[in-house]
Picture 1 (cartoon, rainbow, N blue to C red):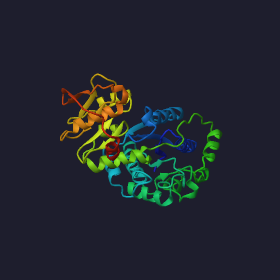
Picture 2 (picture 1 turned 90 degrees about the vertical axis):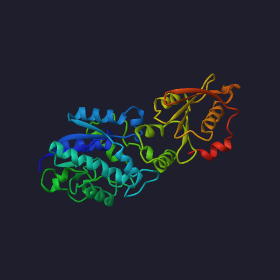
Picture 3 (picture 1 turned 180 degrees about the vertical axis):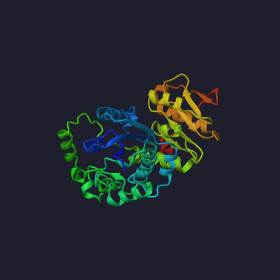
Picture 4 (picture 1 turned 135 degrees about the horizontal axis):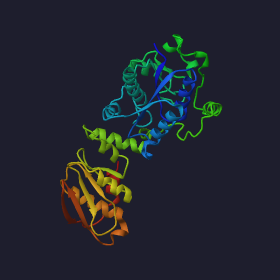
Length: 334
């Protein structure tokens, strides 16, 4: 066993401190950062990845960024250890990341993994039984070092081997961040804008959209996931849903996320939202989507009712008669 490790570095305070504690023990560290469609920080321009890169640069350690791929969707679809308060498969997510970390550990010749987890900080994934499940399922039994709460856990293999001095590890526990903030001040660590990351899968409204998508579509695409984050969503049947943009920026994004088979509807001569029909257009679906546009355009339509329909590179113009009733919208809204 050597003194080289892979550190899961989110860019937040906990993982930053964990890296610092073991750098001070002379451990050679390579950082690994994960990004995801569902990270609230990455929704704001990959903030977490930028922070992780900044921390790695300040510490003088290399960093690799991995995006959770479409295989991660299957983790969300059928998590062995269940969900948290939304569609968040926290334990299975940790297992997924640690498996990739184990693979990377082999690639670079490292001997163990470091994380910034704190026992009891998060109710689902940061418990002793969850830690054990993560280690077992990822094939990292005894090889995940959690420097911030190590003294509440059994000694790891690197500790037993003398690679790490257990006496210099910490005994943090619980949800209070005071110990971390105090340690950050002691280590002169500043500018940690994302001390505890966020996941859209914990959001109740967003979770409903995710569940709806997974329940109604087998082969999910990257575009499908991006669409979940914008607009108002309405389910017509198990094949088709309609997404209505809420502002100019979302209208533009919908236009950029059109996939083969999707249909885009836009107001022809008045200001209003764009609508995307995801799935087959039949039985008056385009007319319903047009009436939805009129409803949300409101007074801006000013009696104008012509819309442009674009599908597979072809465009047609059609007219709708009236805005859809709010009761109909309520019954379809996801």
